[in-house]
Image (cartoon, rainbow, N blue to C red):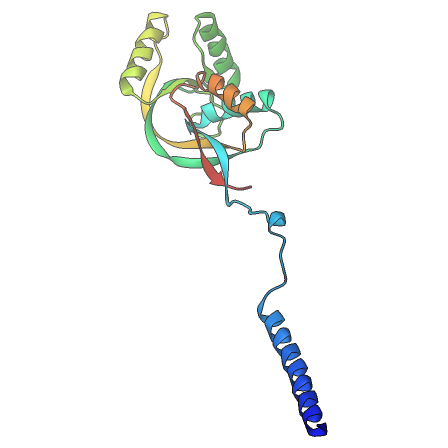
Length: 197
């Protein structure tokens, strides 16, 4: 009987030791429990409005409009390629004052224009518009000549186009942007995805 008791005791001790060893190995294999409700997936893309086909003068005006209407708006700029456009202009004047006098004269005739302010050969030229279509430029040239402006010319230019990317727009911004886009001829507004900021 003593022998049976000792054998059962040894078997029980062996059983306890082996079951603890198996539990420790099992705990090493299974990672600690994670609370799945606390896991947040971060998307790599965000919802964006993409407003495209701006040439330089339009881009400056668009920035002014956006900063006035939405001072807290997050947006960036991207290049979207080059295109040929037709520039209607009055050749450069000798100085800024002469160009400004001509602009005032044009305003009185109802012609929208602005003085070119860069430091290239076009400094103090007067821009009367950029056109994607040569026929539109010729039509505007004829209209300008009918109003008495005889020194305007057309030149084709390679123009860098840019786009404005508005990150995570609200519904109100989307609605307001639809209204603004109409003021910018030949630009497009689309909903899309972009990289997160």
